[in-house]
Amino acid sequence: MKFGLFNIPYSRDYAAGRRMAKDVIDWDLTLTRWADECGWEEAYFAEHYTLGGEPSPAPDAMIAAASQLTTNIKLGAAAHLLAYHNPISLAHRIMWLDHMTGGRYIAGFAPGAFPSDAQLFNTGKKNAQMMVEAMNILDAVWAKDGPFRIEGEYWTVDMPAYSDDIHGPHLKPRQQRIPVIMTGMQATSPTLTTAGQRGYFPMSQQVHDSVLRQHWSTYEAAASAAGYEPDRGTWRICRDVLVADTDAEARDAYLNGAMGDLWGNYNIPTFIQLGIGDLISGGTIAKEDLSAEWMLDNFHIVGSPETVANKIEALYEQVGGFGTLVSFGHDYANDQEVYRRSFELIGSKVAQLVSHLAP
Image (tube, rainbow, N blue to C red; front, side):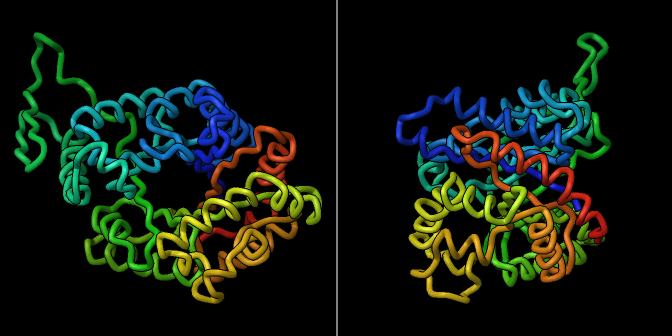
């Protein structure tokens, strides 16, 4: 069992004007450094443009900065929103990041889910089609030698042949194949279908166990039909984790800290408003009964190392096995030691207790 960090980032203080952009940046980099020091496997950075409560318009810049502060942890985007990039330029930035990180880079692709971002870029309802075209271009730039030309609906690539005069085109990835993840939330997620069809890897957002089982079935069927061998060890599942030395300490840090505040006062109301509350509850309770307390007792993985290990094992058994548990990063900047201790306990005691879980 491996552990990962997902820097959304959540910053309600930034949205309220109580924190500067530099504070958000520094906190995400601090969390990533802690994860690296504590032996976590991966850290991801999101891409959003218009969301004041989730400010992260440049995951590639964050990955570049984090690469200079870390040694072992893999660094990825979850995800580059392909409709908002020229894929030729993005392909080269990704290859440069692959070299900058020493081969620790993980790509993430998504169409972009927020209407306000789509309005900003004036992409209308074309994000999904633009994503597919961009992925084809990215794969070609990474793997094919020139000359070649791709004339798409949205972009055209005219890759020249190698020239001794300019010693190029010259850039290829450091890794033999850059790993790519795609995230899914809906039960029969179209992005997880696309991931399976292209030999990419699945990441499931924070959803109920019953939805997670459908995620794997969706991905597995698409991958198998495309001739790929689906491997549960490559499946990342997002689920917030908070560990303290005792259950009581962990419960207090959740309910009276950033996690409980975020889920109780922001995420749950947002999910209900979007009509996706059942993705969290699995329909086991009425949407009006969703609360931070319910999340703590029934969904999130919170407690002492022993309690958390038992909850991880239960999740593992419920979904049939997976490879990496990814926890969102939360804004404990005003109570840093309790959160740093959680990172430490996950990387040491919890990791040891669940080391036998290997799909």
